[in-house]
Length: 304
Image 1 (cartoon, one colour):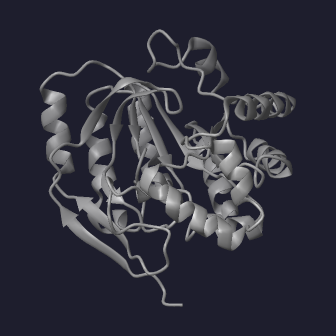
Image 2: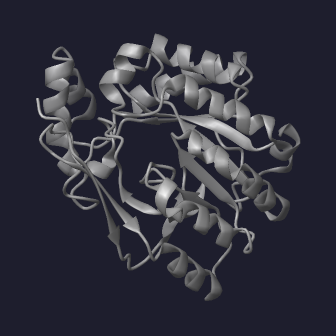
């Protein structure tokens, strides 16, 4: 089987900071900020595989992985912030890897953070990479004016499943150590157990994840179900049939024609997970003030 090629190319973005119509319930964010377009990691569940994001990223082995580098992102962000903007939490890396290998050359994420530190916007960074540790001192400066938290994505920890689901993601041990180091430096950090795969990671695997996340010193663990979107759907079911042939029919019953599993399934999963998390002294949400949607509660700050 021919290995996937990895490509990167400069890209002139038209916009860089997008305002959500409603507060994003997972990231608790008003705005999304993505320094890159596409990803080189190749996770089998990523919704960035949607055609509307980038045509050449997909599940099929013959597809190439591609990243477009938003080289004008710092200029666009500064111009947008200077125009006057309603205060709100910014999610950085919601649909890209902000600390991918291209960051070593282009420093787009670093330059965006340097701009943001002057505007006191609270920030939620989402990544899989230990490269995030490079910016610890910058996070401290942002914290002196506002608030920053870093969420490391770890949807699975068992070796066999990691290999099948997570492409070229950094080792789980490395990601857990990254959480621990961030916490050691006083940075609010936790884990995104997202997505949760029905019938694959929603049982003993979830308990195993919670135990390891708690041992890392994480402040929280966030959960979201696998979302199967439009263009991604056909590719995902084809991959599922190949890797887990007993599951496609179960997934079809659980999802129907929708993007999310049934509410009954998810409520049952979250009730069980919440009980286990409480035993381990883990928050399972970002405890921000609902009425603001972007500021941490005083109770949360005292826990840090």
